Length: 417
Image (cartoon, rainbow, N blue to C red; front, side, top):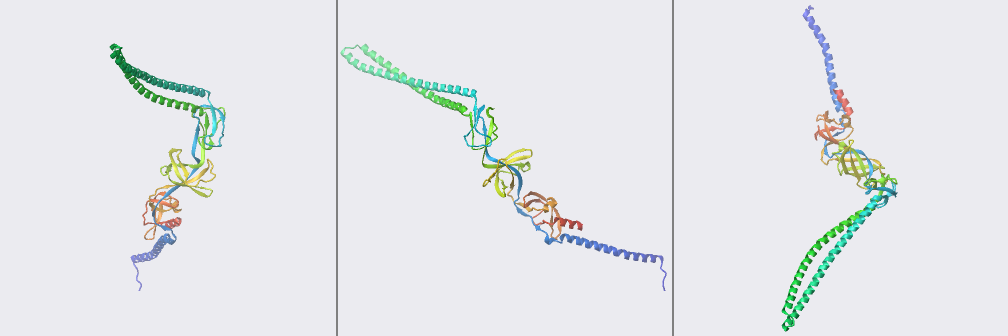
């Protein structure tokens, strides 16, 4: 027999029925979410076999930069006017190939010519005075020599007379007084000889000192005379070196001051590349760095020969010289693109350089965990080369770095989240 249900029993039955219909969708949704999460997680790992995986290695990173450079002669020689004057004759034109010693200009300067002639006459006069002084010194030396010779002759004559007088005194033909007078004269003559010898010694010492001084003065005056003559020679300006004459803009009748720059002779038998480099690399570029340039599909090796540390407009300059054969048909002022390689020989942690780093702007990479999960890892990079990138921080030698399919990995990870 059916029993009449109470109000409480009726409410309980309705609740149980509603709970049954409610729990089924919840279970279904929860299962679906779990399946989706699992499916998304494996999506990032789905193509692991197709991913390029690498580990950081220790290697040398050599950076390189491409810069514009200008062909210049390795050696240039400036042509200056050593004396002032008016351009009288011109023997060459800009662009001419000139040989060492070839005449370029001839100047005239009347005042200089008169000055040179006057100074030359003065020097010649002084040289003549020195010669006369030398002659006088030699004459004085000869005179004292002659005087001593005469006195020695007188002394010998007196000695002979004394010998004769001594015999005559014994025979009574000559008085004792006359003999004594001869002895007195002998003593006087010997003293005169002694004085003359002392004077000769002094004269010889003085003469030696004077001659040394005269020799020095003569050399100095002759040197001055040569300088005076060179002033006239400098009126003809010649090429200091064989090469091409540049910056030679001279007109006939023009007056050039002393020291005026006339032009330049460029020797293109050897050339260099003058490179302008951003000041950012000032501490990196050094003498001896390797460089190369491609000309007509052929590569030529160069080395950095000189670095100019002066910075102008944010750039500094460096000279690059060819290490091997010189290319043919290089033109003055020709512009070339050169590549300079620089860096350190120190081994550092590196990863391969590639397009995948552009996706992260070099700030992170994807690595593969031990559980085969792809994880985003922040890194700090340093120097770069075309093939390698230095890793300063964020990775260890055991990390497995993914180097391809970054867009696909990113999309899969976003779908999972």
